[in-house]
Amino acid sequence: MSDSASYIEKSPTADAETSDEEQRDVQDALRSIQATLQKLRGCSDDERNILQNDFMQLEQLLDKLSNGRVEIVVFGEISTGKSALINALIGDQVASVDVQGGWTTEVGKVEWGTCEYRVPGFADSSVTLVDTPGINEVAGEDRAERAREAARRADLILYVTDSDLNETEYVALLDLLGQSKPVIVILNKVDLYSPEQRSRLLQVLCHERLNDILPEGQFVTSSADPREVEFVVESVDGTTRSEWRKPKPDVDELKAKILELLEKDGLELVTLSAAMYAADKSDRIASIRIRMRKKQADQLIMKFAAVKAAAVALNPAGWADMVGGTAVDVLMIVTLGRLYGIKVSWKNAAKLAQSIVKAAGLVLLPEWIIGISSAMFKTLTGGLGTVLTAVPQGAGAGFGSYIVGHAAQYYFEHSASWGEDGPKTVVKRILDETDKTSVIAQLKAEIQRKLNTNKHAS
Ligand SMILES: Nc1nc2c(ncn2[C@@H]2O[C@H](COP(=O)(O)OP(=O)(O)OP(=O)(O)O)[C@@H](O)[C@H]2O)c(=O)[nH]1
Ligand SMILES: [Mg+2]
Image 1 (cartoon, rainbow, N blue to C red):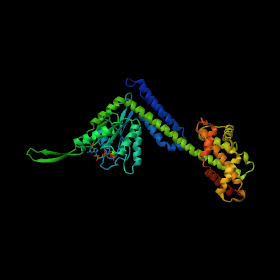
Image 2 (tube, rainbow, N blue to C red; image 1 turned 60 degrees about the vertical axis):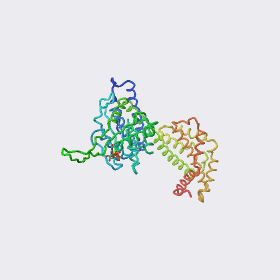
Image 3 (cartoon, helix red, strand yellow; image 1 turned 90 degrees about the vertical axis):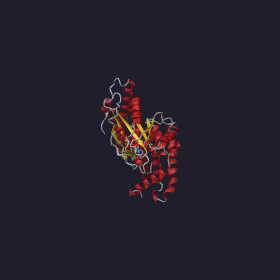
Image 4 (cartoon, rainbow, N blue to C red; image 1 turned 180 degrees about the vertical axis):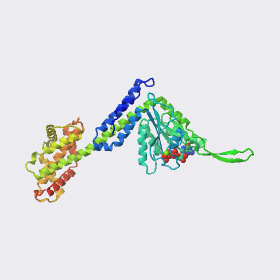
């Protein structure tokens, strides 16, 4: 993963075209992408593996914003004419078009060289048209997801339909509009409708479907790849013959609408979509980190609890003071702290363990633990011969460590704080939410495993 700090230097220089406020917005958006990238760099290797794709997308976004590249994503159901529309706007056959639905399988970008628009303040700015797979292809959920991801990064979305909107289309459109992206809805293939049908369709779309959800003036019609029409050609000798000719694509209204939107808000659209995308990614990174750390912490706590359980079972003498404050618990807390990026000294870890046991009050006292584990043990094990009494003691001690570990995990998860709830409430909640039977069973199994491999146990 390369360092991207240098991109900042390529942001627009203040000139007559951009106001101070616009300059600040661009800088803010660049900074928020940088901050999100920085967060990614601070992740563990495992986390970074999962977030590799996000990292790449953020780097691309940084590059896009630094160079003032506008991305217009063409989105819609299969076979509505998305690829044909790109060809018509560009004036060349750059995207593959076919009658078969699901023809476009990848997100593809092509520079719209003939577009006259330039983002203010960016001398090398350009406009890119992004073709996407259709959203309702049979068994094409992955492709649809790629299309949605492209739309999330878009500065402007061209939403293509070729008839009245069905439910899938309507929901997808609402979703895009909910992301506060500018959307132009295009009724393509208008050449296929008679004037009466066309007028009826416009009535339904504009006044019933889109009236309340789409800003006024953001609906246009087009015929990107009109069907051939039959012409009757009369020769000088009076004979006639028929000839099939393909009319020119008609995307003038759409092109004018795109340029109007860009001229009005181009820079704002680019900075806003970048900032929103970076914020989205930042949330995703945070939630993945929490999830992954939680998983690692859960495994770690169980491992330490099992060590404690086995240690007590194999050497029950003096186990009563082994809940909290023992070497195993302290090491567990220090290790958990490290997992959450918090350095805890041995002494402070011991204090934390003691304070958790204290906060738990009676519930973590040895008698209580032996009570629950012995009771459960009867139902769980069957006979284990001579080690029968040691096993519940061990499982009980391990369970105590399990609770201490989870309370410490909560504490670290909340930046080394008990928050408003205080430790008592936290420990009580953990106890309420813990499936005691299952934890004790796991600890017991662990002890049995250790006893089986320890020749002195019998
Ligand atoms: N009559 C008519 N046909 C069109 C028009 N635009 C596209 N088509 C036809 O519709 C079919 C699908 O066009 P594409 O551009 O491949 O549609 P797409 O939305 O990209 O389809 P996928 O990539 O499969 O999602 C092709 O046969 C086109 O020739 C139009 O304006 N009028
Ligand atoms: Mg296509």
